[in-house]
Length: 573
Image (cartoon, rainbow, N blue to C red; front, side):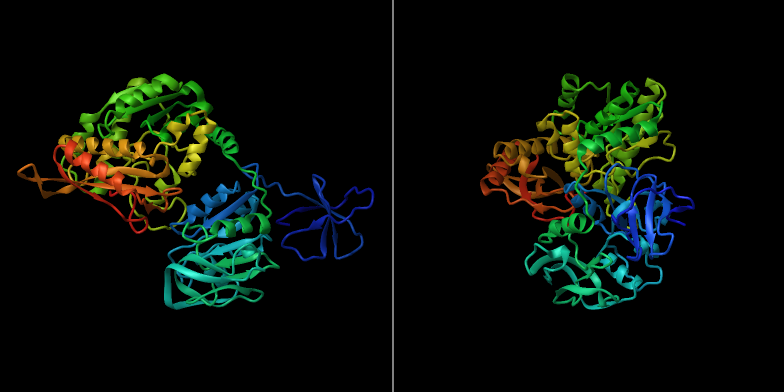
């Protein structure tokens, strides 16, 4: 009765023929007709042989096939969605404690249980509803998700004698649908301290590693699969292929999601949220805020007013360039506010990175309240918050451990009188770029490198003063110019300079100097969630170093950061 209601007097004509089985029900219940609004069944051959069940009135929030990721707190949860969206498979993330009614309402064609920092051996470990395994749809457990599946279905999980963190080699069975096109041995990324001691009844082992005899399992009859490693992480070879096999071969996804469809859905969502209200949007001049503004304008038209706040923490001459860009090509209503002195005063004496971000966030909102009050009443504040912004502050939907606060999601005062509109909150950076192209932005602008909302304040370690800001602006301009001249700009996720709070001894001419150090940072990445330091040519590094030391007063040393993410973050603060 939870699935359908019986019509006691169905009107049936002709001879129905079997067209399929109902997922999750025994094979003696056969679907004979799928004509709306009824489903005709033959049940166990009992006479009368035809029954009519009305279809449940569940309606998905989206018009395409949906995979659901239940989040158990992994820092990689959003990467799962990211990889699947690259395959044009619409994927949503839901808290692990989401109710079954909510899950059913989204009509998922498959569910993925994410990893997480917990152990299923703890009494208070996060668990999903056991009915997840009664939905009759494929389920894939990843790391903690696999261990949870094993535990909930009657298997055994125990502490590993040797934990696996980092690269591991797994031998897989090619007759498992997940691994059908893979070689027999795959290099993967592991991050677990528990292992599966015994698979549940009905499962077979389809992957093993040196420290994990049960590294992958399957129950093909029920379409349940488990991986002790992370296919979503770039370090796993053929990881995207594994996810694609789950989505297409096992779940039957056709890849019907695109930025064009997201654009339509997001426009409607904004319209539903805002109604007849007015929206104020902060423009930084970057891709995120500009795309957010254009998307909101598409939904609410002239009820959007944009404010460009010059916080004094921008790159060299950037404020002037931003104003020119908005004046020339974009039909946005933009108000310019020079608050550079106010931001620098607020940051005086602040050296703690977290405090910097919160001071900048609070000052930003203060300025907005002041400007918005002059412009009339506004109901909503729009922000260009992205998935990586959220996960690095705290998991948007689960118990992930916070890494650092983000300017868009931390430091907002309780008196904030605006309701937030964050239309890009579920997108990754390259998705925002594609959305920008859908909205008509030119390629050169869309593919600008990311720039932190707090600006150069988080690239000046220690005190943020006008003199130190001038030094960094000059050095950073040289980095950008030479990176472009050598043809590396589009190859890099980010490239920039950092001013360190130390001075070192040097010699210029015949005089001893004691001046600042500039660190160079250049990384390659697909989405900002993980990144590797860029192997820039020696001659490029030499030119940058020589120019900075000779052209920027107050600097006598340049160093290059060769740290990857993880363990380091891209920004230094």
